[in-house]
Image 1 (cartoon, rainbow, N blue to C red):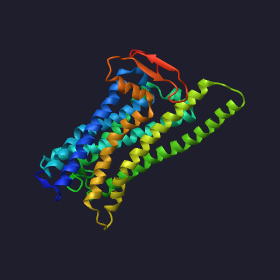
Image 2 (cartoon, rainbow, N blue to C red):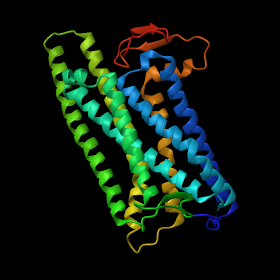
Image 3 (cartoon, one colour):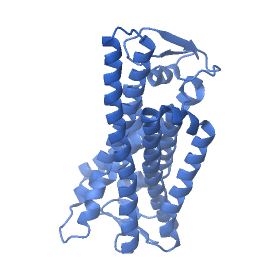
Image 4 (cartoon, helix red, strand yellow):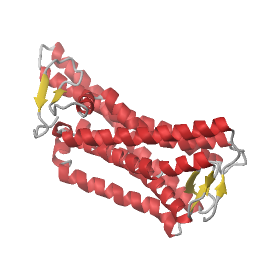
Length: 331
């Protein structure tokens, strides 16, 4: 697609509103996810297996915000797509790359949480740092393949004025539409299956812990470890739920495109912004849920590089662990 494509007529108020939302999302996504990067980079205490996977999510979000959002802002402000067709292909490719990388990362994270909760001994033996990096590389290779197939003829990317984005043309390939659907269902099934077993195991573990205390055991360490695992698992589950909620409008519109129903522009732009919101919410979740991340992010604006971590993560303990960034201790 070359040449200029004009957006549907919009009022001045709507132009300002849509453009402002896009600019705010772009700024928050880049700043928030870069802060996550800096926090983990500066503090080795945060360099854990779950956090490296969350870092992979941040990478996908930064790429999407830096590559796709500026084009979206330009289109919403000017009201026209005046870029070369290759730019459209790049924007669509990057959007689908970020989506597939995020979904695959959440699926891998669910599997690691399943092993950590249900099979902790196997988890320690399987999910070492080297294995983790192999999995992350596999996620990116699969994501490039997922997003790259329309570039080689299976499906087609084109600019859609009602979305103000370059996306896959759902009329170009029925088989690719089916592939998108199967990709979503398979990864969603992995996540749902893992978390159903995780919550079942957590419920059983909590019963065992309460039973130990009822029998007179006073293992404070056991209580802290259990609370840490529960909070980490729930935090990742919140990230997954927010990702799913943000993609609900897009999934619903995907089905409606194959019906005779008229889909208003408002609904399509809601899809565009809700997908963009996925790049914004994760750092907020980390800030709200994790005291370690809050302390690390606040520490970015202080001269002192010392990080104080509450090892109980709100488990009721007042014990504090203080380490400099050079420490190799993990939590």
